Length: 410
Image (cartoon, rainbow, N blue to C red; front, side, top):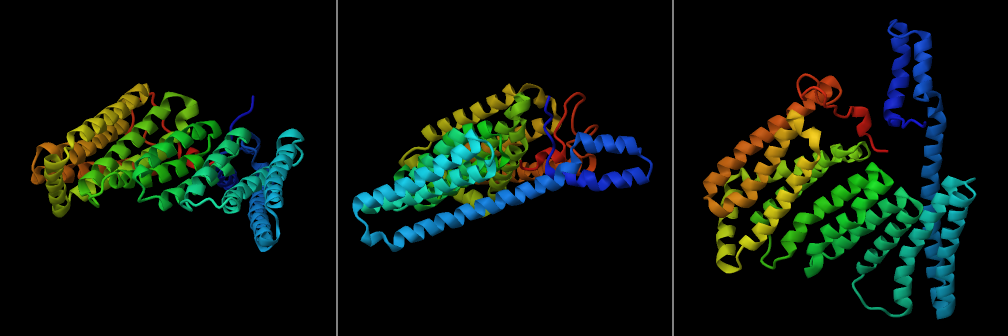
């Protein structure tokens, strides 16, 4: 049975510590040799060489892609429409097919094949713009990045490629920045989650997970802001961000439902707690709390805010239900504390301004921010002191939390 190895960072640290443990007599030579064999420490050099070779391949693919685009652009005006289409589609298909054959079919050159597949996706992005130019398609320049994102995601699913998924996240972010003023931009962050959350579990990559959290987390409050035409709203930003923080933290808790899903837990906790802490931090200032209360009064007098509030409450209840579904992890003291505080942050910034004056919102935000900060530093202290979240301080018996070595990206 194959054993999943810890991160390279952990294994390098272990390799440097083993001679010290032997010299101090804590491990015998036989035990140290068994540890080296168990964690394959002698293979670290070849793995580092392979990682360097992969990096060189991907840099080379990018440079080759730029070179091909430059060559085509230099001779573009001298080519007929048919020749242009044949050239750009032929180069893209040649890169994809040759990469697939070398990587998936023969298996003799997996890194080179993977690089060629990525090169084909890069050429696909250039082809979108070139085809639009050939047929004189007039549209928003950034809309082409949406098609590029879909193509990169399709390739990531087809050949199980993390670099193509990361490329899709980058192009999705570019598309988002280029459409901030679009009325449909409110659907951008949910679309990112729909596209990439299944990829997170399919590829089991923390690179894709972190990218999904960062892109969707950055654009979600902006999406809610741009759904309205009355400028920046302190209340809408705080409500959207606190809901996002609660949802992400609950996603992390739900990841503990199965061993296969636990790799999402720590990144989701970190990002979720960041947004929860940020919202109550902002609301803890007098001016921000006053602006929130004033905006709520104006919204209720003009368009009404309660329908959106009901929707947000339903989403928050669903997130908490997802966390409760995670089961045994709720026996952990810290997880329960953070879940309660994240829910309180949402209540203080989204619900309380609807029913109370700004001074009550201000006091509640300060208290929650203080408690959240204390709980956060307690978790960090447990992690740094014991190597995980606890044993006697931070969890109840029988509940195991991840060690630091398991938190490094794949």
